[in-house]
Image 1: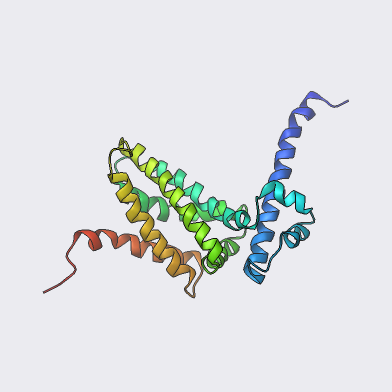
Image 2: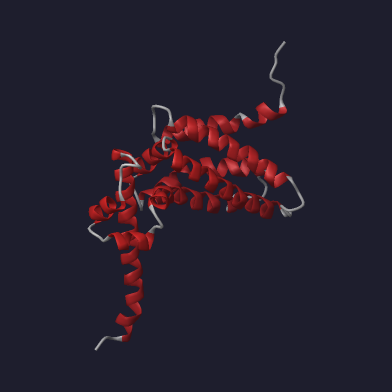
Length: 217
């Protein structure tokens, strides 16, 4: 007869097994997408790579698009947490910058628990070069911006519905991040270090670009 302790452990074991299946499907999806192309890859191939049925794949993902973009959520959730944890004395753009740059290593560690970091990075290039995925990514980016606006407004004690400053700050920040993401994904160096350096350079250029004169003499 099953003990009470064993019965209590079963849900945890089931959840861990589900998480392992989810992560295996995500890794297989990204490996196939980045090696043979998103359009050329079928759900059947992904399921076969993990030795599960097509039905099992659809228990975890609505389709290929969701599987391809799920990897981006890994970094986003970590960024949200890092932004909420920034010291209250930091100005909004400073907090946004530091949440990205100072949380870089921790983000890499969080990603590595699910997929290899190099696969995570290669996925950006795959998304950037696949029109359907890029369009979906940009739609999702707008939703992410709304979340960041809410976090910034909460930090500053503002109502985002009546005060435009959180939206303005986040529009600048996300615009810069989109530029760096595109330049990095289409460049030759897809390392985490290259992405961090490019991001830092562009974020550090925000204040002089917006608040200082460009002409000399």
